[in-house]
Image: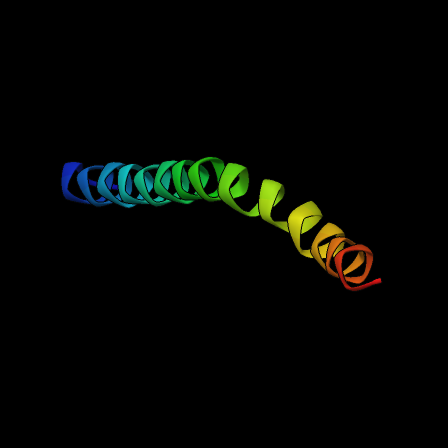
Length: 53
């Protein structure tokens, strides 16, 4: 177990954490966009039906 191994290990962990943070960031930013859209999709057809009748 040399200093080179340690450096590679640190870099691997760092890149893994960076990827995780990016995934978390994207899910946090995308979820608020998707979440309001889902009720809108389910509500829209019933609204159209009410307007047609």
